[in-house]
Amino acid sequence: MYSKILNSIFLIVAFAMVSCNMPDNPINSAYSPNLVQVEEKWESDLVSLTKQRKVYYKEFDRDGNVVLYVKFGENSDTSSKSIFTYEDNTSTEHFISFTEDGTVLEDSQIKCIYDNSKLVEKKKYDNNGELEKSWTFDYNNHGHLERTTQKDMSQGSSYIKTNNNEYNNVGELTGISYQIDASGDVNPNHADIEKDSIVYLSNNSIEFYKIDKNGEINKVYSYIYDQTGKISAELVSDSKGAIQNRYDYYYSYFK
Image (cartoon, rainbow, N blue to C red; front, side, top):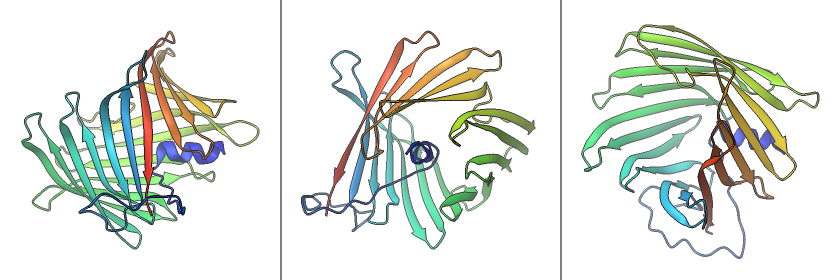
């Protein structure tokens, strides 16, 4: 179970569900006539647990693919929108980001190539069709990401991030140490984080400890799952264990 949960953290995973109790689809989606699932992430009040701010909205088609992904800013404005199309082992994302007043900040196309459902290559093009960035991804025998290579054509920079994965005696991923070799002016993700330590708990939850280069805990991310393996809540705590943010996940299913 935990291996499936971990894959849902690092990759986009959707579950197409069929049930006679599901309602007809009430949403007139311009992105998929086969919409069967909606997923929403909300920031919640730490005391009342009521919804405070929508973080993102996703639509999935009948094949479990994301067809629409909308992110929202601190003021509930739309910060970005991604529309996805699929063909064979390739997906194309039309990505548009916005300023707070709704002005288009970026308009680009992102093409992803998959091999056995694993992302192996990614390319980002600007609105003129020029290649801006490219990524390649390599995996180990456990199926976990082992190496990410990025080239930034617009900046003339590149980096290779290597994941040194650690496992327990039953084959569960328990730690990821990061090594980054960069050239040019580049700031890859996790540049300030040296390791993720992963702890599996008995109550259908996992904790990720973000450990910096000084060996100190930077943040703790706790993920709580329901009995079907879908994430239901996410807690973000500081280095002393004080909860700073809580996010809850909501799902809707249609015929």
